[in-house]
Amino acid sequence: MRIAIDVRTVTPLRSGVGNYVLNLLEGLRQAGPEHELFLVGQEENLRTIGWSSPPHTVYRAVFSHESHPLGDLWEHLWLPRVLEASGVEVFHGPATLIPLRRAGYATVVTVHDLVAFLYPQTIPYRYGLYMRWLLKQVVARAERIISVSHSTRRDLERVLGVDPAKVTVVYEAAHPDFCPIRDRTALERVRRHYGLEGPFVYHVGNIEPRKNLVRLVRAFGLVRRRLGRRVSLVISGQRGWLTSHIFRDLDQMDLQGVIFTGYVPRQDLPLLMNAAEVFVFPSLYEGFGLPALEAMSCGTPVVTSNISSLPEIVGEAAVLVDPQDAESIAEGLLQVLSDPELRQDLSRRGLERAARFSWLRAARETLAVYEDALQARSGR
Image (cartoon, rainbow, N blue to C red; front, side, top):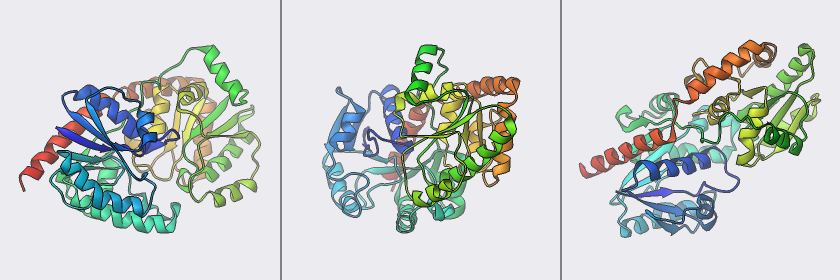
């Protein structure tokens, strides 16, 4: 097959979807070397991917994935002509976007979440309107849909009435770099670099309302008062959207022991996760929740939300809390921080759970979806 993939989310300062695309590409090269990948991206994206050898070809996109509305018009009107002229058989939109104009190739789209429908208050208003319209168009026109969890698949069926036969669940996985690290020198070096002393609770994610940072900081204040020993809360991530209200609320709170690192390069994340006593991820909604799986892959105990996809991903290998209740978050953290045996048990269970997820398996399952989409297109 000649498979086109939109790689424009793979940027140097990428987050969840960009990492999904980069990891999937590497998996596809291993799982299906006989297939030709046709990468649609800008110079920055292609440089970040760093491939120098076939089997792949490149089409340099005119617009980034954040260029609206000109970039959308280019994708819907011009890109289909390029794909058809290039002999593409399957186009994969891994970031909830495919060309809407019908053409001679099959289309596959990955839907990561339905936050625009389920938590519209956590995203900008006009962006939410656009995403609700776009998702309806995309799921109706794509031959096949990849959902990153059964939770998201249920949301697709319930909210948008998607035919279950069109949807395949393909789990993400942690990159192999997320693993137990015993190198004390490297761990101490990353601590010094970020100015971290003593035990700390770690959180990573874009700073936006859905990540629930105000309740997390409130819960951490309860932990510090009750724990009886010094502990810090380290929060990593770049500013996303609607942050003014978040920082306004945080400015009125006791931030003693709270450290904001800003964006952390990917090579530092496994080290920070290994150095942490516990990883906390009390998100209000996740389509998959990759940071929790990455922490478990490092053997770090996890405290996370009991809603959306997170219980499905972590199974019985994490402490689940109510993200709407700061007291519940605090109790979960105290439970782990005050019990060394529980931390050891969660570490073991987390490693066992994380081992079930693999990018090679994800790539093989994704290739099967491509084949299915191509057959569905041919059968029309």
